[in-house]
Length: 80
Image (cartoon, rainbow, N blue to C red; front, side, top):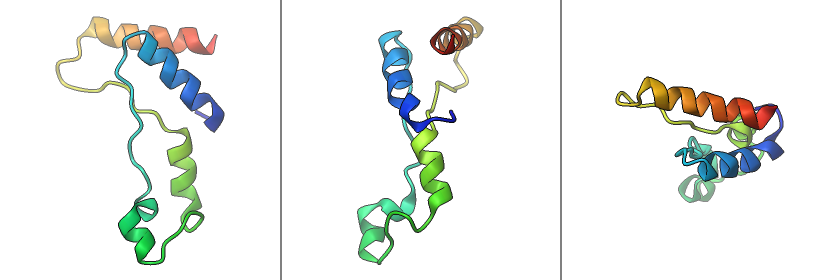
């Protein structure tokens, strides 16, 4: 999504609808081990920007067409 401030409200909305969304792909350089090596926030702004806006929706082989449609419907409803 374009606005990082929308991620948490959308996350909460989808969770309330029973959809297992999550946040993944935390920038490696912000992990404690890499911070000890001298990396810090701001070193990789593109990775940090992506992380601030990304939201993982359900994607797995046994997700039914109906479940996919429900996820799509809920996301569309949120952005109306």
